[in-house]
Length: 394
Image (cartoon, rainbow, N blue to C red; front, side):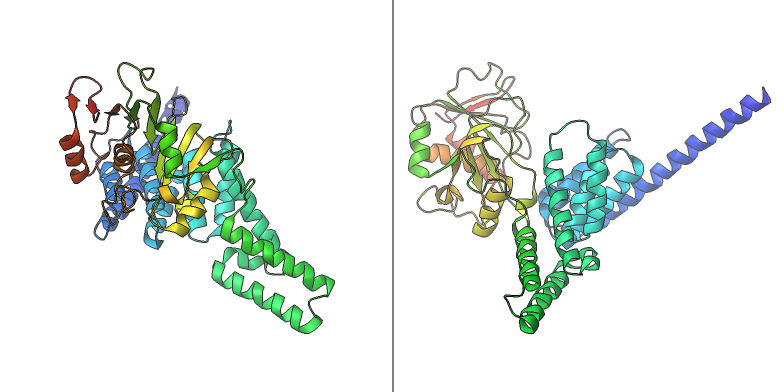
């Protein structure tokens, strides 16, 4: 009896120590987020931090991951360090969490801590039981390992764990030294130059299985207009669905996050942050995918990295990159391009070829800015405030 009592007491003591440790880890993460808020300029990240600071015990872990992922989307050295700190807390709380190791790998890679990223990606993949975003992580892991192989072939294996700029400079110096000393025709110099070329391509573009995105094809403004002309359309916010279903509409338009099992005819997304090409691939099937972005270079890189061959029949070309700023289209002249929801709503309204445009769920907080919501309500022909609120623009 005494032995059982001691065992039970030890178990309860261990649980209390574990609970105290979890509280300490969570408190540390919350303090880090609170400190970040003082200089935050990203409203979406600030909102995610606010959710974390007010989360209940059962919601804290998911809020940690959501805040870390939002920090990565925001980009920047400070945001990436915050994401890594939150990932460290998440992996300490749940060592078998796939999402925690994925976040840690992405944050470490963004900070150039490649060895840590490789370890985190391998842990993530070891815990996965399906494919899903594991394909994206496997691709990232493969790219990092190939980069390491290139550096090792040049005798620069240690540089893999250091700043990328220094590794690139030293690699280039070795190639130049080989050319100067033995000539460009020397077999070893040619092999080294080929590895350097592979290294630069991988660090700049990653691995592209199909740069042409076959069988999809680009579509311009006239092409988009002809594809949607005469089709009734509904714009559905993430998590919202028309109470009467989607069958009454010829064109189902979704933006940002699209459900894996939901019908999507046109999918609109925006690329934001300092490295928007690093986000998850757009795998959800859609007839047309429009990608909005202010920076032309970041937009092109995101198309190459995140569009999945076969996931869309058409994808918007450069004429559809920034409809709210383009004088030939909507031309609202918004400095930040506005929300994805408003960009696609205004584009559909401007093209003026859909006899019916209904909006579902866009009234929810966070979907539209204040000025955007005011524009929608001012142009609404009908507003149904019942279940599954519908706003009719036509």
